[in-house]
Image (cartoon, rainbow, N blue to C red; front, side, top):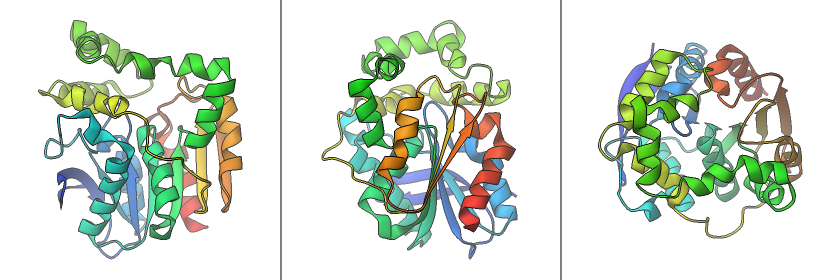
Length: 276
């Protein structure tokens, strides 16, 4: 059974969904843009039923209790700090970490900076940031795919465009692969005052300080062939950025929205990875 919980940290209180016994093996799941913790609902429920303690927070900017206005407050250091702050608040010294989209990016950076805290990493959609940076330098296809990241830095203009005409642009992002009721929920949340700007601040925070290294944590990377944001160049190069045990799963004919488009398939891969 899924619970709604609050997680108080020094940054503020994160809203979250959770399932499973309090003493179960801890798993933290991080959502991406423009979603929320509920994108992991199927995985959280299934992990909880399997005896894990699964927690998925609404991340910084998405939780009303952690919604700073300054874009600089959404830098990768702050986002990784939130992961550790949430783990501390939950009493977790070590845990499994899974992320999709931006949540996967935060996962990669957390695994690089704090490998001692993670049992495993599962990254969905987003390749290792080093592989993505290399693809952006050398691959025209990836540069084209990533063009939106620059466009979305325009404050005010982007918000108005995304919310115009009943949030049509926001709704189209989901490519009709996410249930309409879930899309309605995301739109409702992002229409709250300041919410969409906070979510877009992830793109406006500037480049990370320092370079990311190779990952020693046991890693599962899941990439789908119909992902509009991330092409095969960075996806296939990601293995060169992991020194620990590595599993790559390529999902044919699946879009970017993996956790919600193929929830059973992803949950099965995740459970197998955790079992190893």
